[in-house]
Amino acid sequence: MLAPALIFFAIFILYPLFNTVRFSFYEYSLTSANKVFVGLANYFDLGRDSVFWVSLRNNLIILVGSVTLQVSVGLILAAILQRGLSRRWSSAAQVIIFAPMVMSSVAVGLLWQLVLNPSIGLLDTLLRALHLPSPMLGWLGDPQLAIFSVLLVACWQFTGFMMVILLAGMQGVPPELYEAGRLDGANEVQMLAFITIPVIRNVVIAAVLITMIGAFKVFDLVYVLTSGGPANASEVLATYLYKNAFNLDRMGYANAIAVILLMLSMMLGVVQLRFNAAQARSAQDKAKA
Image (tube, rainbow, N blue to C red; front, side, top):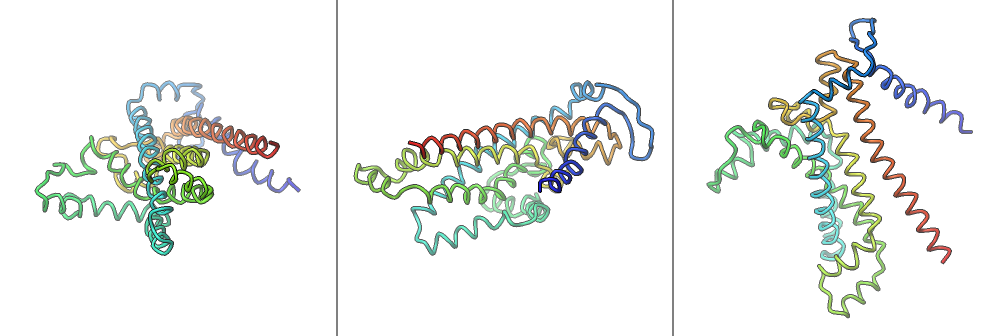
């Protein structure tokens, strides 16, 4: 019964994974059948590659920023929708906030290119109307701001997803806890901090892990918005891998980047699996008690 799934997994997951690791020890091109074994040279070159370290730093910036903004803002929005709005208005607001998530990332990138355009963009037009300064090189053209502009767009698109996850967890909080908190004189902020968050702690941790894994997989938004520019300032590991593979035709080097990216993603995946296992054991212990 398991054979079809195992065969599929072996062909489409394990075999490409094995080849990615194997070919990272070679230097070769897509236009030639010759492969030259270079051992760990590609990995040593990565250690000396300043663009690789910029890409890794940008992934970490997106990771920290995404966890901070998406989870915290998603938590606040979920709390407002859960307890601050009527059921009809809450449903309408959920649809509006979640809408960016169902849009194509390419469409989101093109949309925000217009919004952030320094000449005709909505953001700069608004700043000029308020007599506030805007970047001379544009939000996507300034090396100091480009990666943070990408982070802003990513948070705009995916915060609604975090909100839905956290809202689902909040709906499982017993209403008796809120009634007890209200009798003790707690306000909404105190009930969120001392009742809601402790009860949905596992959901919050799961949301954080999902966001962290997504931060290392980011590609499409960066590629559409900046293509890694200007001057590699917004490069991330996935876009740098793509450029080395298909623009520079350095397939062995690209495979080495893929292995590093795989290792980082697997580390986060192991954390998530251990968390799920710990959560399952906790649920079993509670059931036995």
